[in-house]
Image (cartoon, rainbow, N blue to C red; front, side, top):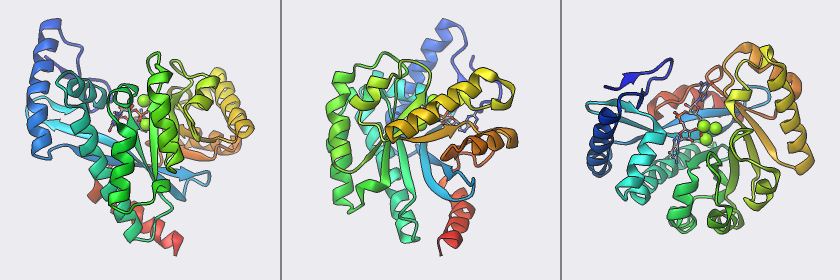
Length: 281
Ligand code: C2E
Ligand code: MG
Ligand code: MG
Ligand code: MG
């Protein structure tokens, strides 16, 4: 059976093949019901400016607590949706909650706080993400500049399949961030082709920065690259005061991680928003 792994609260599929297949089937079967019942949640993790104090963004992270299997890791959820043809429904459900958060921020005078939504390369390739997102924002009269799309290059990304859509999103005023930069296939040319405004340094290079010379070099290089190309850089995975201190000394403009704030359900975000409102006033 699945077990809760390491420090993650999620179940992983490290069980035997037969269990894994069974679990896959359970997930796929129950997902459409969960979507119909609005059982999927979107949690939000704060992103701060260099001062580690000014709230500049919230990253939307999908959360699903399966009645029997417990919390499902987002990548497993995305994969299950894909194999039963629910990719677009899932994307729309998440987008609704992202838009609701944008409305909350606006109503509280926090319209400069940007909401970041993850879209996998596969979703981007298979679904008319540009039309759906642009259409939804315009219907709800929400400013495109409040939204950012994070795209990962975990697999050899077929740039051709997603480039046009990212360009359309970008033209509409929506920001594009290249997620998990430094691992996988992220390359310099893809930064331009994907219309990236922002780079998110993968947390494997950020967490424990103080104890590893290699990480140090990579983070410095990406920060230099960002300045050179006029791209904003976010460090994710800031887990300790030490990580934070080093990133601040390096001048990393944006910071995200457990040390600064965990992903939270909307109701638990109250304090974070109150502080931001006080600062903004
Ligand atoms: P990501 O976009 O790189 O998101 C950051 C992940 O790192 C999140 O995991 C977050 O909870 C975790 N994290 C944040 N700060 C820290 C930290 O200081 N230390 C550590 N160890 N982890 C930290 P999560 O929520 O499990 O998401 C994993 C991945 O799943 C995401 O990586 C993203 O690629 C994907 N994902 C999440 N939500 C969605 C979604 O709504 N749609 C799509 N397509 N993908 C999603
Ligand atoms: Mg992300
Ligand atoms: Mg990331
Ligand atoms: Mg990641």
